[in-house]
Length: 80
Image 1 (cartoon, helix red, strand yellow):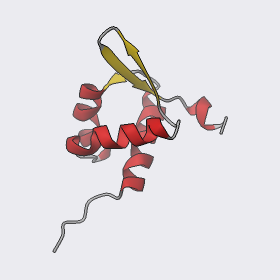
Image 2 (cartoon, one colour):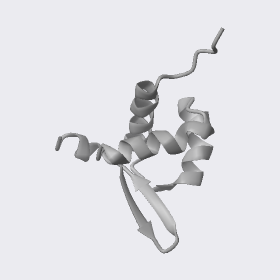
Image 3 (cartoon, one colour):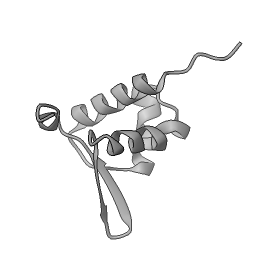
Image 4 (tube, one colour):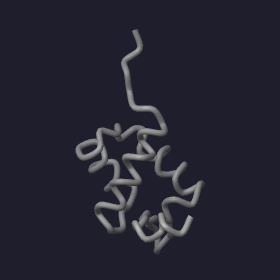
């Protein structure tokens, strides 16, 4: 019996909520620490979920120095 995890859609939705609630900038390692605790998204799948949201233009990302930051603000959701 395969253990029931969250679907990609559920993870995407939870992670989008996470960004909207926090209104802050995060590095991948921060997301991998916070999302499992707060949204039940396993740290293993955080990168894949964030990347899919970035690809769809829901989450923004920018490289600053050697670090990549991710963010999404509620105001952006109303622009789509």
